[in-house]
Amino acid sequence: MVKGLEALRRKFTQTVPEEVRKSATAALEKGAQEIVDMARSLAPVDSGDLRDSIGWTWGDAPKGSLVLGAVGGQEYGTLRITVYAGNDDAFYAAWQEFGTQNQRAHPYFFPAYRSLRRRVRSRITRDINKAIKKGMQ
Image (tube, rainbow, N blue to C red; front, side):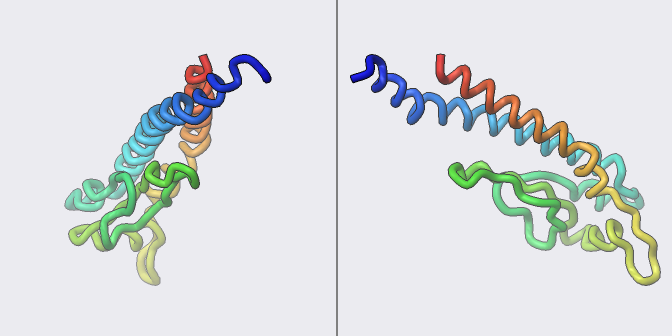
């Protein structure tokens, strides 16, 4: 039998997943906050309701929100983060983003996501790889 196999198996089943979870959580939160900050800076401001309605949350977005998308893993279902805009006061979030028949669009949500997605994905991947290496030591 190979020496140290049981210790390696323990690292894979206990230490590494916990390190990855911590690292992924921090990277997801940082990335979501960057997207929210940029979307808020791009959002048209009249009363400020739309700008103030942009946010992120773990799990599902508040009812009535325009959802950019939820990011989460298959194995760790609890690690699901959602970036959203709109609420009861800013019910017009989608109208601003996409426009209507009589109003041109004022995109603020998807441009923020598109400009930051590579940076956010790279950070998540990099941090997870670091966590795996750290967990294996």
